[in-house]
Image (cartoon, rainbow, N blue to C red; front, top):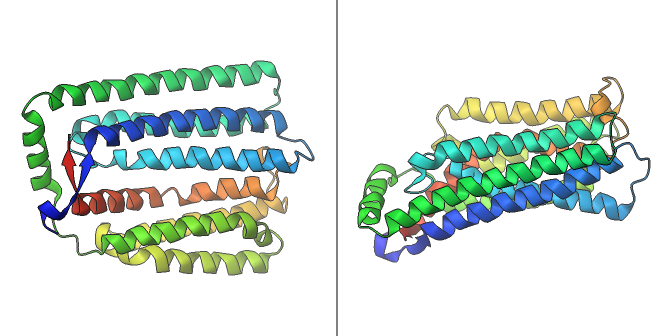
Length: 294
């Protein structure tokens, strides 16, 4: 695709989207964390509460995924310098999600615990805002000089090249994968009913991952077979482990009196290795179809 036929992609808007997605994440995790801390262990949390918990959890995941491409060295012309900041934020935000689970399963569930968690999220949000604003100030300084053009030119020399993969097809694979994750809300509970259902679903899940992502992984990821094997083992082991916990074969206090939707939210975390491949697809696709502008 010739450069003149590419769509323009604003670096400023990209940085702003990451900023907003970080704010979205912290807001969603605040509401989600408060709800799971208050409702953990309650026999009947009600349909509305269950839907809200899933909704805010998915919003938090969406905010996290929107920031995931920033972990790539060549996500944008400035990211070689900014990646360490984004990586620190990403790790901290993952810890925020883990903290919500730990507090929800702990013995103390009163207003003091909720207040401490709220303060932690507020501090995390403040740190995130400071870092994002620092990156945006750096961008504004570069934008006002001729350095931006040289920066983009150097970036294109380093990253634009033939990958051998049909990146538009890879992007469609992720769109189909999103539909698959949404459908899991309705079918995952069936996998907990019996070991036969768990086994059938494990095979089906492996086939879906292979069908949607293997071709792109083969062409974009070094040691692609090992990477895909790790992804398959993570998701399959997650299914088996959660089934053992559900059957009380393995007793984990964190999962006591949890419903199927909460088990699903934990299992979705087993797909996190896919974030690396998704980031490479996103960056590669945007670089092939867009040109960077201020």
